[in-house]
Amino acid sequence: MSLPPNSRRCQPVTFAPAQPDDFEALLALRIEAMRESLERAGRFDPVRARERFRSGYEALHTRHIEVDGRRVGFVVVKPDADGLLLDHLYIHPHAQGQGIGAAVLAQVFEAADARALPVRVGALRGSRSNDFYVRHGFQRVEQAEFDNYYVRPRRQP
Image 1: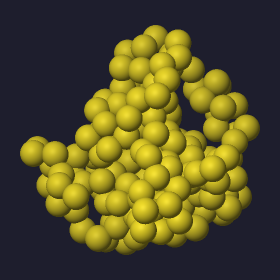
Image 2: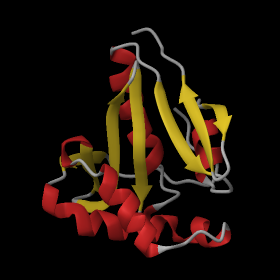
Image 3: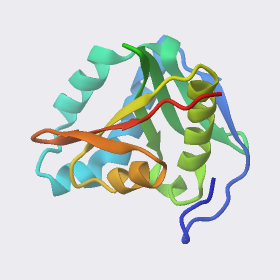
C-alpha cells in the first residue's frame, strides 16, 4: 500500500491491548486528535466528547498503537452486522503524517480480508480523515448532518 506523497515511513507499528482503566488517557488522546476538526465545525464540546466515548468504550476491542515503544494512538475495531466497524482510529497530532494510520489500516484490512468481511467507518464531515479513508479504498455510502459513512467492500482471501 502506498503512502501519501508528503508522509514519511514510520517504524513498525505494534499493538497493545487496552484495559478498562485506560479510559481517561484514551479520551484525552481522542480529544486532542479531534479538537481541530470539531472546532472548525463548531462542535467542540469536551463534555459531549466524554459522554460519547464513555457510552461505547469497550477495552476488549481497543488496542493502543505503539511505534518504537511509544503509544501514539489507538484503534477500536468491533464486529458489526456482517462485517467490521472501525469505530475509532486516532493518532496523536504530533505523530500524524508518518504512515502510522496507513499501517494500522493495512492490519485491519488483513484481518477483514482473511474472513471476507467489509469494513465500515464514520468520519466527521470536513475532517481530513475523509480524504484518508477514500485514499485507502473506502467508498462513501451515506452522508448525515455531521458525519460521512464509508465502507470498504469485502475482499476474498
